[in-house]
Length: 519
View 1 (cartoon, rainbow, N blue to C red):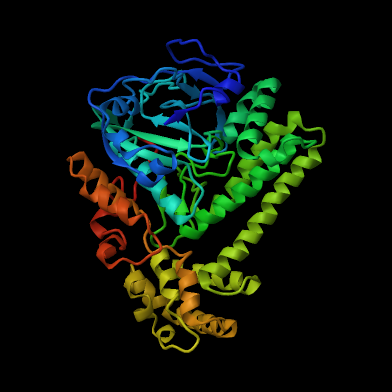
View 2: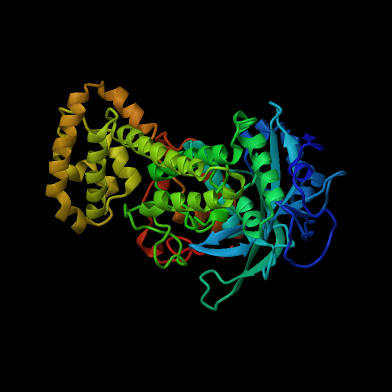
């Protein structure tokens, strides 16, 4: 295990190294020293062993009580200088000023087997200078969700921050899950997050908003060095950075749409400058296809619903462009960066529509997909299961003539399905013609489709069930779901019970379909 002692974020960007107590506004500083608060009984309950191996961490380390104490926030290795990041952001379209890491702090940076640097961060390790009125803690419910979602996204091929391990703390944390005046104690937990950095759009917005141009430039320089070294030495680094972030963000949101992921809180402080999924809060994977689906009960106007995500990412990029404007000589270069988002998003849509339907790229596949999505919503089909069913359609088979058989396990509302059956038959007839015209061997086409349309996703009811069991010290559902999520595109009969729509009795239960930012 090689901890980096030079070239870290805190070595290259100004911050407040002196240790102070209390919450405060911090100027001319991108970070502040922040020490974790000890917990009664830290215990590692889950480890991403593949990630640990990539980081060069030996399995025996996770049985070392000293290492557990460090990850639990009760001890530090010699030379560690933990910090919390300072940033701002727009929340639901409104500028919120300074936000910062209110319950996350970084222990330092590790060098992996390939020499790359990784920031190691504890979420839920206690108060920081940016905790505002919060206690800096996290509950097992939300921490388990983030741990499993991070694993799932990596296996699905979606850019993401990673979760190395999950710990319980032996303490209780009081939370009002739905902000309805009913707080209750829950088991405390810490999730150890890993990423090349945790830089957000809001990391650049705050110094720009305050007129701290030197700090803004230093943050741009670090971002380029860490994430986009190909831009070193370019004439307009800020504008070039925007274009790169725009392309990475278009790629990211396209992956979200492909697998049916809804972030839930797409504020600018929750968007990563390297195009990684960050901050798993009230997220959800689509079950019944609904373009207006949002898992976040706080999003009363559906600002961040599934269909709106591409537009909201662009909105956030406009805010980022405004933050970078003080460093650009020509505003047209920033406009070019936003245009790069539009172009790449359009390319991704064509690519993903074709891949999900098993057809050649082009406007025909996109038009078919748009009709298909309308029909999925009308028939109230499960998104993942319905797309998987399409892989069984061939140009000459009879399945497409019997939608009730083809989509048997994707039907969630028989009456809605019956009303949509005629329209489904018409669409399937057109789809069969497109498949036949493509001429690809059926098995090859099905394998390609099944490589982009997941069989298994971490549905909220599965996460809820695993969290409830873990709170009772039953880790089997967590371990089993974690194992299954390693291969989300492979049908595994032994895990078939995990591939089902939310049971009716859970559909209105907090944690299944009703989620909030309470964590």
